[in-house]
View 1 (cartoon, one colour):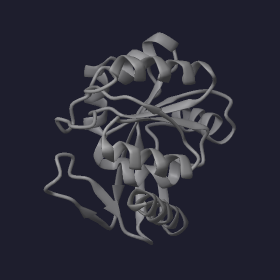
View 2 (cartoon, rainbow, N blue to C red; view 1 turned 120 degrees about the vertical axis):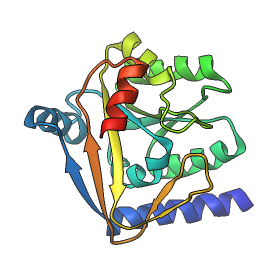
View 3 (cartoon, one colour; view 1 turned 45 degrees about the vertical axis):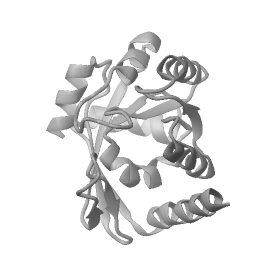
View 4 (cartoon, helix red, strand yellow; view 1 turned 30 degrees about the horizontal axis):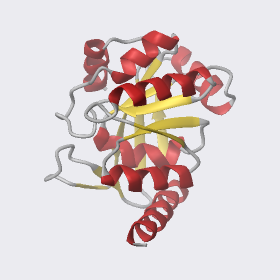
Length: 198
């Protein structure tokens, strides 16, 4: 019962952020912007969204509009996140770099082959912060679907400094700037360099 209440409240808060926050999208060039609009708004092309854990709460309110699957860890917190994600319209796949990695990877590849966009916090459920794990690059290489790197910068946010990922919780009515990299089939090192440069 406690988890159901947490899921309900968290879902409401994230939807509230989606209603009240303004999203400013920043692209490296017009070609990336055009491809994003074809992919995100019209589902004409697929992409894999690569981001860091700290940006998750900033990105969820915006990307709930997409036909997107997400990888959720097998932890107890992951069970809550699964409920929230499904309430927001995401398709969920369970697994992580620390638990159920092979199962999660195979399930993710299947979802991508079914036509879903796919999103993963690339520094895994436990970090270290700003270090890209192998999962998303492996999915990209196996399917040929490019990765779109993304970082989020809210104008007003609570930063959880004591958490390993220094999570950002955007405040209602703030502007969330989402900065994108280029669509590419990155390896883990190249993706890390790109995310850290955004």
